[in-house]
Structure formats: C-alpha cells, structure tokens
Length: 430
Image (cartoon, rainbow, N blue to C red; front, side, top):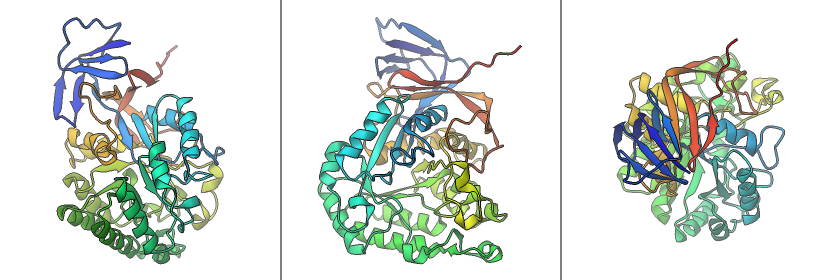
C-alpha cells in the first residue's frame, strides 16, 4: 500500500533531519522523505498536523515470558504493549523455558511473533547449553537461525575460561556477545545496593564492586580476543566510566542502561517497595547522575526497558523474596522524553538513544527514516499526555513503580513495515 504522511515534524536522528516534511511509504519501506516523487499517487493520506514522526523504538532487552512462563505474559500481550509504547523492534534475552540454545527455539519464537501485532521480535541465543554456564552452545547454528547476539542472560558462567572461549568463538563469526556485568560471588543473595539504605533495612546488599569487577574481566577479555561485546544494563557511575575509557581506547564495546536507572535510586526502595526490587539494583544518586552524564555524552549509546512482566503474586511478600524486575515497555519512551524536559538531552539526541543508537549496536538495520529503510515509525502528539494507570496499561504485568506518573505527550500511532501495529483508541463522549 502507498501512503503519504503530511505536515508532521519529522525527526530522524540517524540522518540529522528535523523539520516539517512529507513522508512517502511504498509497501513496507520508506520511499522518500522531504519531497514527493514524481508520479507518486498514494492510496492513503494521513494529515499529521501538530504531530511528530520519528523512527520506531528499538529495545535491546525485553523479556516476553513465552515460551515457558505464559502465566506472566505472552508474546502477543507484550508486543501489543510495545506497540502502544512506540517500540517497533525488541530483543529477547535467551532465558526462556526452554532456553534459546538451538535453532528450534528461535523458529518457535519467530512463529509466535508472526501471529502477534507485527512488532519485530529479535532473539539472543544462549551462550552456553541450557544457560548452564559450562559447555558452549552451537553459536554458529544460532547465528544461521537469525539470532542478533549470544548471551548467558543473568546466569553466571562456570569460569572466566568459558567466557574467553565463547568470545573467541563468537569473534570468528563476528557475532556480538551481550553480557551482564555482575560478579555472582560478590552479588551473593543481595537484593538492593550495598550501602546506608541496605544497612538500615537489614537487607543483603550488592556492592558496586560486583559490577566493576565483572566489567574489568570482560574488558580484559575483549582486548585479548577482539570480540564485539555489548554490556547490558549498567548501573554504576564507575562502570560507565570504565566503558567510556574502553571505547576511547578503541575496544569494540557498547553499553546500555535501563530507563529506570536514570530516574530512581536506592532511596526509592527504602520503604520496602517491591516494585523497586530490580537486578542490578537501584544505586546511589551519584551513580544515577553518572549514568545520565554517560548517556548525554554518548558513552552509553542506548537506553533499554529491561522489561520483566510479573503476575501480581510475584511482588507480594517480604522484599527479598519478591521477584525482581519492572514491566517497562510502555514507559521507555515517556522516560526517555522526560530527559529532554530535564534539560539533559536535546530531542533528537534522546530519540537517538532508543532508535539509531540501538540499531548501530545490533547492525541489523532499523532506527532510520532513510529511503529504502523499513517503514517502522511512530506518530506522537506532543500536546497530549500519557497517564500511567491500570486502566490504560496493556502489558500482562502491572509491576511498575511508575504507576500514577503522568508524562507529556502520547503515541497516537505505531507503524511496522508500512502498516499500523497500534492506534490510539478514540474516546467517545456522551
């Protein structure tokens, strides 16, 4: 289908384009931006006066719970929540049940995603068989099946030697290795940041060193092997500084941060709020500001949701016994745009952290409105409002500390491959 979208403010961080311009769509691709080609006759016209149009968001870490934990959520429910939040591509970690350690699991997830609303679901393959941390999975077979990276999710590896062999193997195929920087021995059974708040609450803490020690080993092995490595969900100022130095030294390293780490701190868990039980834990205000500064500089080039939906029972009981994680697909864009309101980033730079930045890390296209790119984009009303409430929430998991928050602007439409994946319902008044 041919579509002409007129009068929108078009923001394309990948090219630097920012202005009111027409966007022409032919089939599943962007045909032209800024001018209407001669002879183009759209079957549909969309007047987007007063709205912004920008590339669809790419989320580098979103648990969809299927297969294996459908009582928490499904691919269908969470991709719809993603579309509502302006996310057109998301990346699933491999810690499903069974883990994604063979092409069969990759194919199963792809089939389930095709039956959903259209949001693109990319998959990380398991670094080790069954995520057991011991024997390497068939990384080459997983790459042929279409995985965008390999990871052991949050599961520890048996030894640094296993990680070295995995990185050497992955480097042979230029396959990205995605790693969580947390030393399991130092983290122990911790559930909050180790510091004054954990001491007052009497809860086991996770020290900053759990991240920096693991990150030091990862960076040393990157230098040794030349593997392309992405560090998921940094949580400390010092960790961000280590990544920045490694990048300055020319190492093939990238990193992301979960959006909630840019707004919340250990203080938010001080009343035993189970919705603030996350791993890695919420850190200090100094860490939060350090992460914000790294995002502003571009040392951290992507913001992810770290979406982890849970059923309500998972957040009941003593803090340490609740399941960690936040349902976050629907707050990724609002929180990112709040950084603009806070004066941390210009609008195109903020959008780059959830569009072209993640796309560059994945090297799988997307995040652009250039002619020939997939027609994955968002129409956004900056004069509207997004109220985070149970009445409007679409994810099967309502475990978010942002319930009740209100944000400027709202998504009106999300398009994937030239077709609407989600359209804001029209309110009917009596």
